[in-house]
Image (cartoon, rainbow, N blue to C red; front, side):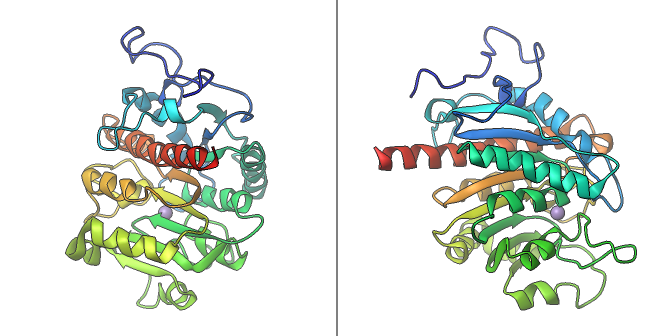
Length: 322
Ligand SMILES: [Mn+2]
């Protein structure tokens, strides 16, 4: 461990409800230089087609992330000892201009990438993942492990609007940010617009694992297949909180019953360990639709799990490089 790594506020000295609300109670910094992992908010829901409010997600996830402790109880990993991590604040957005927001978010993530840090972003609606991918996949398409109730590969909404939170992964494939043969979607369910809604995605080579298949096969088998598909090349992870059942995470834009339990979601994220990740995000936490913070606590905990997987990768790479 480097003595210079940022450390969270000690909850035995300053109670969890006191002080500034930052991700994981880490220092707020203004630049990503020197960081291994940059925790960033994307307070923007300009792509939402129905229940808005995910713009308030980062602030509430920061609040509830104060419940996280220093050590992962399964891995025994101490993320803040093996990686330098901080809260880099919210990326700039424009709440009344969608295309400007996409440009601003891409520029914000590009700064993180240029500093050599892995971005771990909290949305925001799922369209926010598109500009993140534009920044992390500038040189070559990446693979994707995508937890969601929805495929988010539709073409257009409300006329010819190509940019909504129901379309980001179609755009990302068209823009060659993703290699569709290395894309896995897990937890997909709910009513669809028509029997052919997923045909385009499947024709591109995306592997859609519906919730019914997940229920039959379980996390270990599903993630073994997902890891095979993504392989050792660079990949990104996106976790839509609506993959979790609305009985456990009601505060989201497009709830669908029959979802993952929070326990299954934790198992799935832990099974990402060992992949070659270029970043991750957690999206679609919408505090105005939440009850007693239950969605924000689920989101903050999934963020902690993702951060631990990224920290273990940083640690592994540092040891291999040494
Ligand atoms: Mn989604």
